Image 1 (cartoon, rainbow, N blue to C red):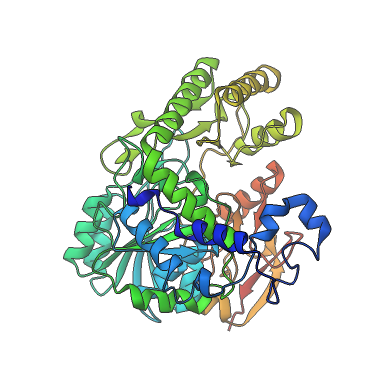
Image 2 (image 1 turned 90 degrees about the vertical axis):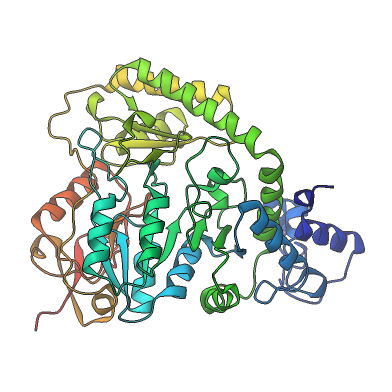
Length: 482
């Protein structure tokens, strides 16, 4: 039998169920008997498998049996030195890999269009970001990958930096030259970390962009729940063969729960098995669905569903063709407006809409019927709502003016001021649209008139803004002036 057909956590849970153990441990719902409404909603099987760590099921904090076996199988499937089961989401995987390589005062090179979780890790550690501002595509208004010349310049100007963090791919499917960036980082004695949240399928599909592990990176945070089929909040943290994974587990255990959900872990175990066995077939279907949708949407007119024609060998080194990202500006609508209409009038929930684009996440769970429904809805929206596009914002990224480290700003003395009166001040909190969770403002950055205009425009268009203390979005926390 192919060892990848094993699913040790799943097998242990099945055996536990067959043994009909009487529970005098937590969780207190006792296999659902103590919460009938939840049992009715989620199902009997789900509640019976919501169990706690015990000898037959191992312990996520210190695995020695079935979880250890499952991690070893995952590492082989991903061709990694080690694979950690993460049940606090990919956020915790990103933070753990950063916390494993930098401490207070250390520098880390990263693109500014990182997920909030990466900047949160800098607040926790006190590390100093060296931002590589991404170039943008003028037609689409989206930020791109890291240019090699910019990475070389950052390394040359900051030779003492401990690591380089790369987003690969971005939410929009843009890939950097990961292999060359890894080579440059290692040449400069820097570790290379990859936020691979949207790249699970790279490891199992055919003719996909290069994976972090294949490129020789030291760490990769992989959102198995995004394109891999596991439950929300379940992810893997992968490490290279030269990384001390015992130390990494110590770092993970600083913040990850000691009550790891077996529902999340078994979903990782089963999903890894499915992808290891049938990944090529699964993602061939996804690619075909995404390409069909792209072709049909582009035939509607005005929409632009982009793909590998954007590749330029540098800031767009490769493209993830499973991503169905669509620019909406030529129909005279912001992406978030199309997002809202799809949900409110057509009962279609897409991944996100920003100021110029929408993203429809295509996965193994989709079919032609649903794809046709999306295409038809977009065609109708164009026919019913198309208008002049003048006055629309045409870019998603504003280069920040960094004044101090995220940790200094976040923990420093602060005061609350009206958003309109904050120009020239330094923010101590985040402002971002979610998804995708890339900060418009991050702690330690100067607030400019351009940023205020962008925020007000985002509010007016209906973007979901979060990260700030004031839930009414009228005030912003800034560092007190001395």
